[in-house]
Image 1 (tube, rainbow, N blue to C red):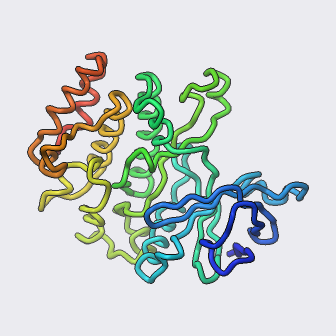
Image 2: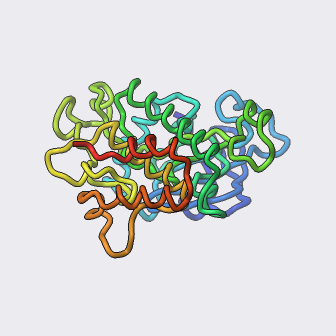
Length: 305
């Protein structure tokens, strides 16, 4: 395992413009992003340096780790668990984990593809995206989910626009004009609360194989407004259907600019009682979405019976 080195005592102290090293290769820090639990550093190969590691990282690379303020035994274990899941996934619609690095007191860090932004960024200006673009994005995400489920028995369980990243795709850039979302390839990221249903991965991640714990991992943790109703009901287990429901919410938001909740009912109550379902139909109607798309949205948002 190679080292991630820098001149500060912690990742959190690094400033834009500072030099860092992946192994012996120098990079320059271009941007720092913080989340609830993690920190992402966007790095660019130092100008004039031999491109010795391009087979691994390319000219630009992102490094992800636990926020220094959040470092503790439980969070480090959770991050290592995410890396265990993530390392087994190689697909065009899954953000690539290129290498796991040793950052000393900051623990392991993930060297990953430098993506250009998130789906939330694309939604921010107009709250929604054109129907053709939304449907292409949905197809990208379905491809990534099916791959993860079929290959490693992994269910994501935290799908939301913030966890959908994108980068330019050369083939699509030749097809679509500048500014069109269809120029990008959209990918799944952040496997921190994924449910592992594959024996070998459970063993590596220190989860009992074929146990109730491995089947219900983080069943009630996620982002409320994108979670499937069954995840709040005792006796139901998360499954690929739970992820498809979350995709339905994302698709609805892309098409209409809104999620099917209102201020008078708590989101969990809306999910359990089915009120969200009626609201979704109203949103589709008010946004003048073609009736041809309604069956797809309805199928994705249908609760597990």
